[in-house]
Image: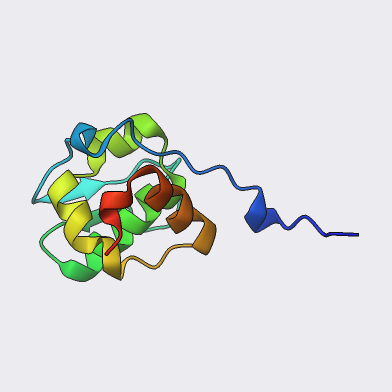
Length: 102
Protein backbone atom coordinates (compact mmCIF):
# COMPACT_ATOMS: atom_id res chain seq x y z
CA UNK A 1 0.00 0.00 0.00
CA UNK A 2 1.36 3.41 -0.98
CA UNK A 3 0.90 6.28 1.41
CA UNK A 4 -0.35 9.55 0.01
CA UNK A 5 1.48 12.35 1.75
CA UNK A 6 0.06 15.83 2.18
CA UNK A 7 3.09 17.34 0.41
CA UNK A 8 2.17 15.28 -2.67
CA UNK A 9 -1.34 16.74 -2.90
CA UNK A 10 -0.73 20.46 -2.34
CA UNK A 11 -1.95 22.38 -5.39
CA UNK A 12 0.51 24.97 -6.66
CA UNK A 13 -0.76 27.75 -8.91
CA UNK A 14 1.45 29.30 -11.56
CA UNK A 15 1.08 32.49 -13.58
CA UNK A 16 -0.28 32.33 -17.12
CA UNK A 17 3.23 33.27 -18.33
CA UNK A 18 6.41 34.77 -16.92
CA UNK A 19 5.73 37.90 -18.97
CA UNK A 20 2.46 38.31 -17.04
CA UNK A 21 4.46 38.94 -13.84
CA UNK A 22 4.02 42.69 -13.53
CA UNK A 23 4.84 43.18 -9.86
CA UNK A 24 6.96 46.00 -8.49
CA UNK A 25 10.74 46.00 -8.88
CA UNK A 26 11.49 47.97 -5.73
CA UNK A 27 9.93 49.35 -2.59
CA UNK A 28 7.80 47.57 -0.04
CA UNK A 29 5.36 44.84 -1.01
CA UNK A 30 2.68 43.66 1.42
CA UNK A 31 1.59 40.07 1.01
CA UNK A 32 -2.10 39.25 1.35
CA UNK A 33 -3.18 37.10 4.29
CA UNK A 34 -3.98 34.28 1.86
CA UNK A 35 -0.26 34.09 1.04
CA UNK A 36 1.38 34.84 4.38
CA UNK A 37 -0.44 34.95 7.68
CA UNK A 38 2.56 35.67 9.92
CA UNK A 39 3.19 38.88 11.79
CA UNK A 40 5.50 40.29 9.09
CA UNK A 41 3.65 40.71 5.80
CA UNK A 42 5.57 43.71 4.43
CA UNK A 43 8.83 43.01 2.60
CA UNK A 44 11.47 45.36 1.20
CA UNK A 45 12.31 44.21 -2.33
CA UNK A 46 15.68 45.97 -2.05
CA UNK A 47 16.73 43.60 0.74
CA UNK A 48 17.80 40.21 -0.74
CA UNK A 49 16.57 38.29 2.33
CA UNK A 50 13.17 40.01 2.26
CA UNK A 51 12.89 39.47 -1.50
CA UNK A 52 13.58 35.75 -1.16
CA UNK A 53 11.11 35.38 1.72
CA UNK A 54 8.35 37.21 -0.14
CA UNK A 55 8.96 35.36 -3.42
CA UNK A 56 9.09 31.96 -1.70
CA UNK A 57 5.70 32.64 -0.12
CA UNK A 58 4.20 33.95 -3.37
CA UNK A 59 5.42 30.98 -5.43
CA UNK A 60 4.20 28.45 -2.84
CA UNK A 61 0.95 30.05 -1.70
CA UNK A 62 -0.10 32.64 -4.26
CA UNK A 63 -2.96 32.27 -6.68
CA UNK A 64 -2.32 33.07 -10.33
CA UNK A 65 -3.82 36.56 -9.91
CA UNK A 66 -1.74 37.35 -6.83
CA UNK A 67 1.44 36.03 -8.44
CA UNK A 68 0.90 38.10 -11.58
CA UNK A 69 0.24 41.23 -9.51
CA UNK A 70 3.12 40.90 -7.02
CA UNK A 71 5.92 38.90 -8.68
CA UNK A 72 8.20 40.61 -11.17
CA UNK A 73 9.64 38.54 -14.02
CA UNK A 74 13.18 39.95 -13.82
CA UNK A 75 13.36 39.67 -10.04
CA UNK A 76 11.95 36.13 -10.12
CA UNK A 77 14.50 34.99 -12.72
CA UNK A 78 17.32 36.46 -10.61
CA UNK A 79 16.09 35.06 -7.30
CA UNK A 80 14.89 31.66 -8.58
CA UNK A 81 18.08 29.64 -7.93
CA UNK A 82 18.19 30.83 -4.31
CA UNK A 83 14.53 30.26 -3.43
CA UNK A 84 13.96 27.50 -0.90
CA UNK A 85 10.88 25.69 -2.20
CA UNK A 86 9.28 22.30 -1.69
CA UNK A 87 10.64 19.89 -4.30
CA UNK A 88 7.25 19.36 -5.94
CA UNK A 89 6.57 23.11 -6.07
CA UNK A 90 9.87 23.74 -7.84
CA UNK A 91 9.12 20.86 -10.24
CA UNK A 92 5.66 22.27 -11.07
CA UNK A 93 7.11 25.71 -11.83
CA UNK A 94 10.14 24.45 -13.76
CA UNK A 95 7.99 22.06 -15.80
CA UNK A 96 5.74 24.98 -16.75
CA UNK A 97 8.63 27.42 -17.23
CA UNK A 98 11.78 25.51 -18.27
CA UNK A 99 13.56 28.83 -18.78
CA UNK A 100 13.86 29.08 -14.97
CA UNK A 101 16.13 26.02 -14.89
CA UNK A 102 19.82 26.49 -15.12
